[in-house]
Image (cartoon, rainbow over all chains, first blue to last red; front, side, top):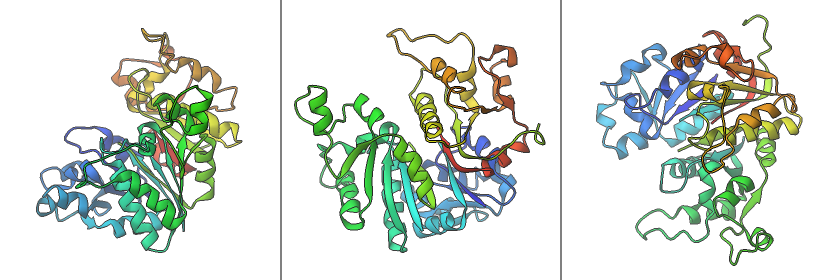
Length: 96
Length: 130
Length: 125
């Protein structure tokens, strides 16, 4: 399993498409920084293909006042959870 | 596990340095070893010794130094990316005939080969980009 | 293609930026060359705007900025021969194989995750 890390939102950058295309069947995607905008209910459709394997960093959501708008299908993790995800993954790939 | 971080974002211009420092604190708190942070692209500006942010903002430069002091993390800066961006240690300053220097220990100017070695030596290399 | 290509290696460098507009491409290529000089097996993937790195006819910038086309010539010298590209990205710019400086293998959708999984380290630029 590979952890992909995305810091751009689908509302302003197409890099998420390349990240999704690069993901294998069990790979996970963590949204951080501005990437967490993609976790909102109004945006999360862009990540439909990987439902259940989409994560978002709580601290970046809450700093932006968006924790309440995060879609229920997204698994929200704190920074410890971020570290855990990297432990569980064989490697990480960052998309920006 | 042994970790390395690759930081490619300039301090304060993007969130990359903040994210990397947060992640660094969390991973050492979980008992992992952070061997090295390698600075590349605009990330090399993190090594600028004269950073003087307002007192009510996080002092990123000092935070990197603490990481080194408290956990022995190496702070390596790509020399080719650094020299172009006015980041010189005293040795390079002398070599290029400049008065004053902008990088000092614990930050070290090193070649890209160190990044490649780091990738080989650690269990996880995590990139934080602008 | 997917059955004939060797998708494994030490380092995969993904190049996503066009030449001249930023230093990403040059810095990514530098990382690839250094890794190869250290004896690692290196693959390159030209993706998104990065496919333009392969376009023929690139020159220097108005201030004499070197660009990256000359660096591409050095890849073979460093034994970097596994070059891949995203065919959709190429098509987006109306380019075809005949417009490229170097041959790179077009990756189909199923091969991209395999390419990434097959390399120990993946760096994006």
